Image 1 (tube, rainbow, N blue to C red):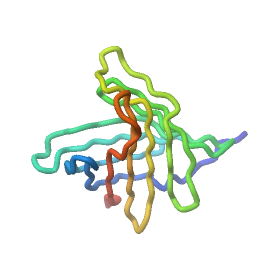
Image 2: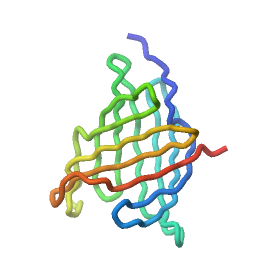
Image 3: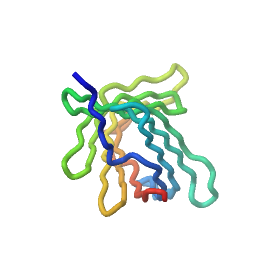
Length: 153
């Protein structure tokens, strides 16, 4: 079957503000999503603490589109020794909900271990928003992050 060249609603350079939901810690975030082949996008993300611009987190990976069934796969690597594989579908309303299919960790990764992840991205009124929920070996699924971003010009 021929590859389908998807226009991914999240493609581009995004910047905005987010927060750790329970703690209220505010951060600045930058996301870059660049098409590198049909059905394949490079994803990079960085965050910095708002108050002093100290780096908090970074992650990198790929969004892959399966042209046979419409499933979107996210392959994601974190610097704290965890890699995730998530899958989901894009709704008609520019919403992508991804759920973890597999999570692996290095031998030096520290507890609490993430056991399940759900990410919800949505585009509304030129604002890309996401919410991240996860569970660990010490607590059930909870809302962890929220962020709103604008496309950089």
